[in-house]
Image (cartoon, rainbow, N blue to C red):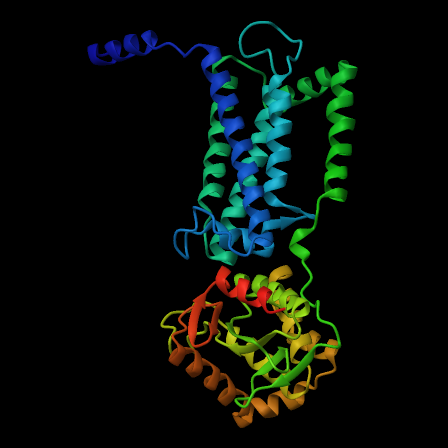
Length: 400
């Protein structure tokens, strides 16, 4: 053995593992941080759907945007927001972490570390799946979600260190031992095997489905018509306030505002008129868009224009926003069957260029008005982006 190797081995012998409580508290802090992060994400998800003016602090760019991820249909799993499943998972993990397992009293053997190792591994697998969905399907990343991924892998790493440094059984035999220990203590078995499933079932059954907000709130008595330019309108025949919306069916905020504006029209049918114009952020049709933002959104807009020629615009409009929100995709054949629209006629009108000319007219109208994003609203010649400002709302409410 060389002198250098001997020195190296002596130095390694001097290196001591950190005290067990350091690892234990690191895992407690990480799990607590994961719980807090999930609570924030659940709150943000709720605000995204219920507050028309909400924007999270981490809506930084198109590619790094927590709101885009929250607004996607992939943010819901088995009837609950993914963030709420995160709360349940971290709460369960912390409950296990708080329990002594009744085993040997030497450090590293006082908790069900093998069971928690497997739970952390499931957390990590979930992080990988959600990361792939964000990259491939949503094409946007949530900063707070990325933080939870880091927390999950850190939990797995620290538990691995504890199991390695304190000589805990293998990952299969240790798991069996942890389950036997839980079964040997009736109070714990009742908590983890009975109480938690009942709690989860109750949450799934009772959690408010706020993301299924109603879009079609119109009364048959509310007037409808078409402007001189051929754009559908709904509301007052002699309006005191006219809102012209420029929208994209693949834009989440457009769908949320669509529901809000229809509620306003129903509330003030003799004061407010809503005019709809299309502004799909599809670079193949919209000359103001220089990179793909919402590919194929123009095709959906063309279908809505076709529905307008058949007197079915507002019904189809609501259905398109609903499908975008809940399914993240459009089945025009299914919608055509649902509303009695003939797809052969749609294709003929598409081939003739009639529908494309109307779409081009809307896009040029928006460009001339100063529209560069969706949703945008033109009121008395002025463009408002994203929301209707309070002064306009006060004006509508004051003229009821």
